[in-house]
Length: 99
Image (cartoon, rainbow, N blue to C red; front, side, top):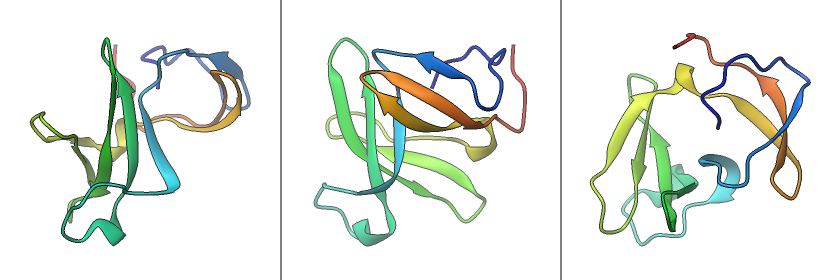
């Protein structure tokens, strides 16, 4: 989601090319233990579609075909709900503020 942490809980914002760690959509890749993973999408000139999971330490790791896997602290992510057509409502802000 956007790097603009000036957003507030309850606020609706627009992002046509979001990075999304889906909570309810299952992982669609042929991976071992994919039943413990969920769908991931991000736009970097083209749409990357992959999966994400949680490490023992509570970090989030992503797996996208033909790209290196990556890991980041889950507390940096914003929780949102889709409102429609590129619009999202903030449910919870990151636990750590970054510039």
